[in-house]
Amino acid sequence: MEQYDKGRLGENLAALYLEDRDCRVLLRNYRREGCEIDLVAMDQDVLVFAEVKARSSRTWGYGREAVDARKQRRIIRAAQAYLQETDYAGPCRFDVLEVDLNTRRIVWIQDAFFIEG
Image 1 (spheres, rainbow, N blue to C red):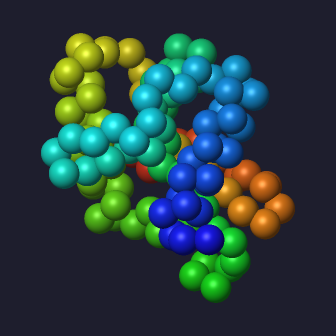
Image 2 (image 1 turned 45 degrees about the horizontal axis):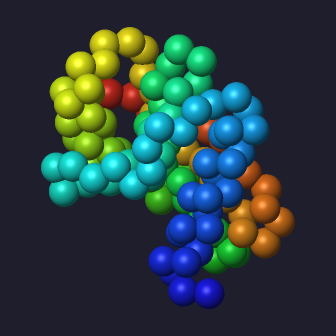
């Protein structure tokens, strides 16, 4: 399976996982400011910007480890663009969903990182 296909499958599984937990997926692959947010969803009254990391092995570590400071800054930049476009002023958070493509197990890390300042 190609890397792109693995990523797409991971995003599909993550979106279904969130929907099964009463979240409403608003957007997929939101791109702005040269950055991308995999999933934008509502978890009750909280807007969630979710990064999905799909893995078929642990060779490269856990998915959460790939969401380093540089990646976080890029997600935050895209999220800020989204907030400006929509005039959304409610609570929001940044989550990471780790998807094991072999077992279909998903680990949902809520509040995985924050905007500092």
